Image 1 (cartoon, helix red, strand yellow):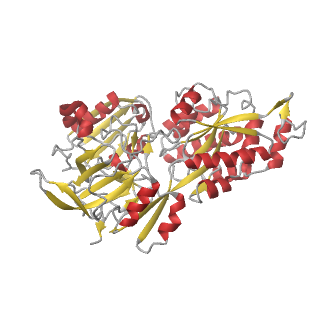
Image 2 (cartoon, rainbow, N blue to C red; image 1 turned 30 degrees about the vertical axis):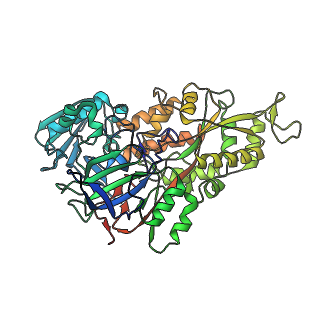
Length: 536
């Protein structure tokens, strides 16, 4: 799992190839680490295989957050495993009547890894630093100032109401860092971070691993964990392995306890092993076809709908994902605030594959197969469009299926495989027809980020004043109920206009062995390590 503030397709993932020295020759429960005097000792170490090595451990300088770097930090609030908002570093929060001031009452007796107390003044310094240097500070909303009203009371003032802030807090983006230590270390803070999490930094082998040790002073575990104190394990080791065969081999050998992002074609094999547990959760985003709505072709809603009605999502999930996913027809995944089952059902009724209707829409737009070659044409020109696709294997498989499906409707789909950075550049310049993309976020405000006309991150270049008005209202609404109503209206517009084609939600699979008490939080996408013990 990785979380980005909002996802740009597969995101240019950094994949590490090397294994940490010494691990392959010993069991995962006994990883040898050096003492300060150069001698070695055996530690009770939880070993996790991960695909993604963090760019930095400095929360304010990274553009994505996952277990690999996010577990260092604790949010002010979180959601439990049922989706309910529960305390973390803040005991409670209040929102002013005008929606412009958020007040957090901090938990007492919490400390950063450095030993510095977590006070309102310290959290204010953390916010100030984030607002100054974070590359993704804009997603935190229109913050005017942050105030430490007293030792335990933090006030965040906005220039206008910003309802999505609750999910910004839960995401971990604004989790407190030890700003005093960050100021002392400067650029070195990313190599020696200080947060408030149950694990704290110990050692990094770039390209190979990250070693954390348990925080011995930690006693503010989440409500949904039995163990509120220090972890039962002494260390947590993330190993960054690129090759799936290597990851699977190490897991089956017992040198890895947690295999995250299990390759879809390996799940059945691992499920058959008697001592392996499989846990699944749905992703917090969707995969979709992005139309360039400023393109002469896709400026016509009939053509957009014809493409949407040509798509059969079931084979995409069954073949491209080996069944580990769920077809999606509406704009939001079920794990995102603002998801509406009524909207999803309506979208399914509107856009379940119907080749007859697709061909009729093409004909209405003037596209017919005049020479019986299987491809519709207009004014002597065949309907040929380009689909930009990243190198991710599942995307490549999905693109080939889409190519076959669209051809049945008479559309010639050309697949162009490019690096995601190139695809994003072409999208920003409106130099594309269609692209296979995805997003991930915790809140329906993602629709503002990728559709609202004034937003620089808009992808589909789709303009609809009524939609923009609703998406702005959704940011300022006073209650969750009001926001849900607003987002339902916004999603109705997206259904009727079809500026994109939602395709599927991934099902994330994690395999564990040799441990007990491991679980996943589907609403934060984080590992829950508080109750983990190793089998002896």
